[in-house]
Image 1: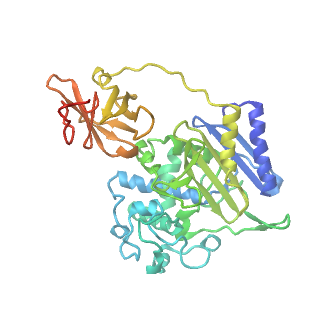
Image 2: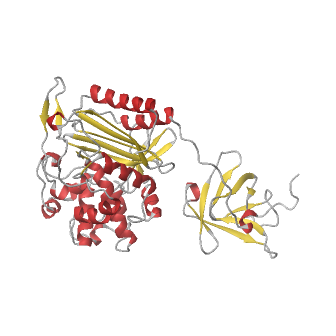
Image 3: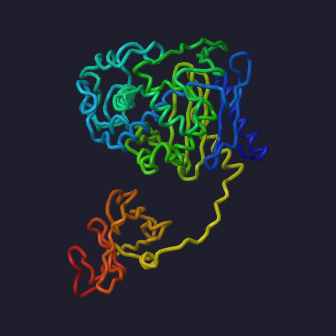
Length: 451
């Protein structure tokens, strides 16, 4: 683990200690990452036998499990075994909610009820998948598919079964083979192994504990079954931020991190991509997920921009403040702000250098910059308006990556002498001078010109 300053470590530990004491959690562990690598581990409280928890102590991570299931589904998509627009019925016939799509299930926009039928599934032994799907009916759909974000544990139970049917193996075995083993996450399991923290409920008005049950959730296991350690979750934080080609194509992971819905709370700071929770925090756009099971709370975040990350786990049913994780990121940044990597020149295609500089959409000035490789970025000179990045394609065009022009095509239209005449961006014409009369401006340009 890379070193940080003693003062920084003390400030981080103090924040964890305050949370463990004030939230009255039996134990609390946390890890902070910088540039994809763990730089600090801290723990407060004790686990069984009065021992202090370590980075190898297991805790139940609850719904963080969903992020692994989502990766498995996207691997199936990348292999051509399904598309995100497929209705569930194409892969799981005779399901009462078969009209919802794979993408809607991943993004919690399928409109399904949050919980499965029967008693509170997190505290009882789980049913088998046939029993679960047999208990579903038209009342399982609470909202029109695609209408709104509505978190659904049931939806991820169905996705886990989807994976199992395609791979002809239990979803957990598939996760171990396709994700955990390649990443070296050998201490992430479906049932606890020693040393592990026992889960407790803390009495609201007295300092006493009540053990919470631990069981196999059966068909609901893909929604929150896994146990893990700080060491393994640090690896997962790095994966969420940086990816790993052994598990998933980086472009697919970036697709999973694109917002597909927002959590309609009082302040829209939290959203969801495809199986991944998103959080905007002080200029960061974090990717990860929270987890909650009886006796346990957990959270993991990774920042794709700089590889920063954080995770926390506690063996308590409730009480942990959700800001503790981001507070740790803030403390590290305040005490040891990251030093930017040195700038260095890179080779550039002369034909692309010609494209850089000012362009005009009508009278509005934009700047085109050349990014590493052959990618481009177009942004308004005054900072107000549409800005997008574009990825170079083999046919000589560029594909919009974000903003208003995401998914749109940028073309360079050249004159007879080979020089760049104008840019064509999905019917918008960008020229070197405002309303260039020599360019095919839609609607034409007044012959008398500017006056």
